[in-house]
Length: 216
Ligand code: AP5
Image (tube, rainbow, N blue to C red):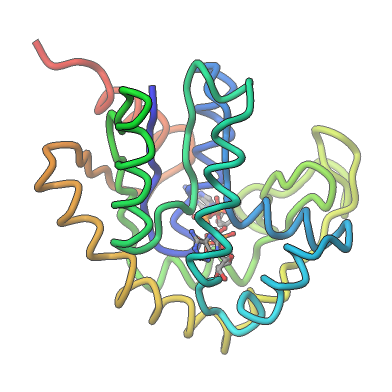
């Protein structure tokens, strides 16, 4: 299965991807995480992406698309993938469709997690991320058991530099201009599933699972 998680910054794509990938045995491919990991390692890819990410802009397609196609060719992606943060504009969506079609594959569903703007801002301002495994936490709604430490791997938690008020505003602007049109694209393809992203992560997970169930 190839499933896309669509939604604004802070909608809970990473949170739901962690739950879905574990329970459904799908490989979680998150473009933001790939860029951040490359940056941590000091790789050229990360350094190229850095200036765009800190301004809240999209990393250019020629960098992003190749990185994702390389990742999708890895053996752990053969039996199913959960795409988080990709595609993020129409060009990326079309290239992805073409690349999958060349292997007789296709996107099965695009799950759009819908959250109000006020809630997005609250979520991003309180977010902490594991430097090692990228698991997201929230200082109010899902704090770690030990302050500053990841429950899963013990890694150090940090706040993303692009979660400042200014950069979040820019990321939302970019989302509405470039990514939101994908809702129409996948609706037209008969693949869009819209779920409310408000409520607890477990409630939202339940909605996604029931939306993904084949309809009789
Ligand atoms: P990326 O890392 O993909 O960021 P994003 O899309 O802005 O999404 P976020 O990671 O901010 O949010 P999320 O929806 O995953 O929410 P989360 O689960 O963490 O991209 C970063 C940058 O990389 C981009 O700006 C761009 O520069 C570049 N980039 C990435 N992909 C690209 C592409 N395809 N093309 C070009 N450039 C690209 O949750 C947020 C917070 O809310 C957490 O604290 C969490 O604990 C909390 N939370 C989650 N669910 C709930 C809930 N139900 N109730 C209360 N709190 C909740």
